[in-house]
Image (cartoon, rainbow, N blue to C red; front, side):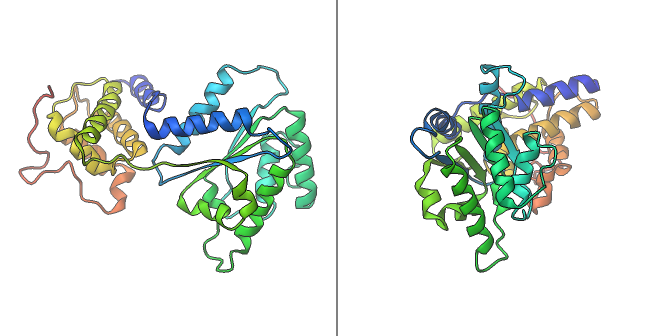
Length: 303
């Protein structure tokens, strides 16, 4: 494979259109919030929580891209604002980043109150229908035992909903929940709460579904699999913990490994090398693709 082919196949993994219960629940929630989130005097919100790699960001970006594909192409119109929450945010960091996203020439200027006023004005002027804040756990500083920062952030998010301009969607790790649990008024304005997690691998139905998912990803690699399917699927589940984002990362890394090593197929050795050189290997887990009977284990073409 040349570099262009490698990049194209990696890109296809990111662009996969997946349909399963968790992501469908998330997409349905986003549709509801967009359609009904400003019915009444106050705007509403939704929250997606789950571990890293559970598909939250994929669902948000897929939703945003779908809306943009069917939306207006007006130059001065931003229907959906998507941003990643700033790390260890100060009181002004979040409104400042939102203002910058909306094209404010001096996003950090003024007090937080004045910045908030400008933000509301710009959201109205740009016809914004939804604000999505990903990695919202960045706004939660667990080192502060008195939860002062969490309460202040939750209060600001509530005030933005009270302005009634547009609904907000928050997505992040489980610690993000504290934004709702520390502010009953913010929680009361929540239209949806969606928990996303790993795929289980206990029942026959769960195993069959995960197998279909794995095959979908490896089909995009467009390389013959020289490893038994009955060996591949449970090993991928062990390697990724059943998290969809980690499966995507593993397959993308495998495409790179196969391309750089000049391989014409994917076997257990290729998967072992890919896992060992990916971020997954940094979590302290043994390499699940290295078998006891050899460095790469028995391989044979999948049925």
